[in-house]
Length: 92
Image (cartoon, rainbow, N blue to C red):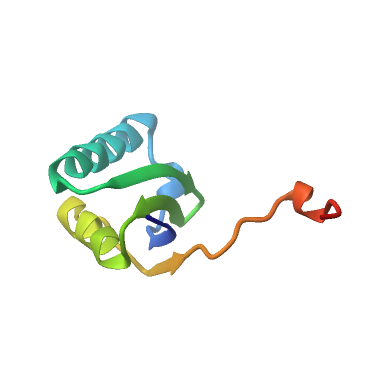
């Protein structure tokens, strides 16, 4: 399984109501359950005009299939190659 960051351009995303975000999340979960293959939506970060989503899936094509079925825009998908944080600065 691979981890992906999905960038979705969505003007006004930061103004979506909690109810609208709930509908989006419910739709995503419904489609995830229908895909029938290992796939995990971890979380999404909503900014003013974009949504950045973290997904774990077998490949990019499966991430695109999820977006297509959900009717979500996809502008970029990048595979995460490494994760660093403040602990990464500690000596090996």
